[in-house]
Length: 269
Image (tube, rainbow, N blue to C red; front, side, top):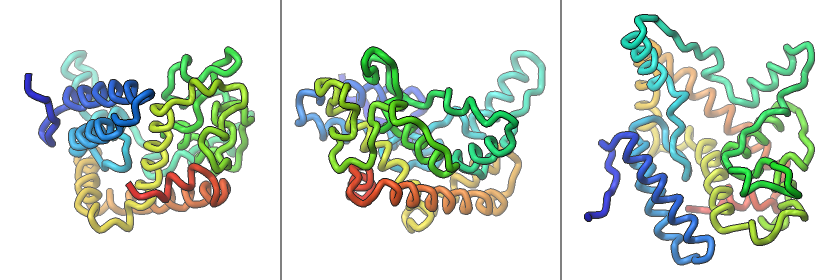
């Protein structure tokens, strides 16, 4: 059977196939570093399939289920199936997660509960410490969470995460002392590298000449879904990117130049 490669015309099913291929390669690579190139090939193919869905960056495929293009399709589906007009609103479309968290806490009568939430992509078997489930602290979702909490001026106990100390110069040393070495796998590290590069590349997007057409197309897609002009969408998109860039660099400075996260963020692909 011929090798199935994704093209830009492939739909979500192609992306899913590449995601499964990447996961299989990552599992094999836990004990065989020679599979790195297969992982990279699978990631590149997955990114190619996701390219049309939004702004691709880093090594993490675009998250489309919150994109206005997707919600516009959901609105049409609800109308066709049930005859009801549903409408998705995006009041924080041009705000970062950190800005949103800071404002939510400032408006709340009881500024608690935000810390009783979960962001991590990892399953329990990968992030349990002393038989208690934590969040990994290094996947893209966890890093965005930690970045946002830092931006909002809030704090969490280190024990929230398996990787308690992002200031450590070595990846392994940042993990909880109670986390078995056998569970610090190549695949887990790869998730951390991918998450870091995702946020780092997003921070550099506004100054990337090669991505100007991609940003313009992203503005067109969002505008079409929400009824905005491209100019109006770009006027919101650029400040958002600049705000993320500011938050990301401030977060990295707080970790120090010797942090393994800072090293990953600056390393060329």
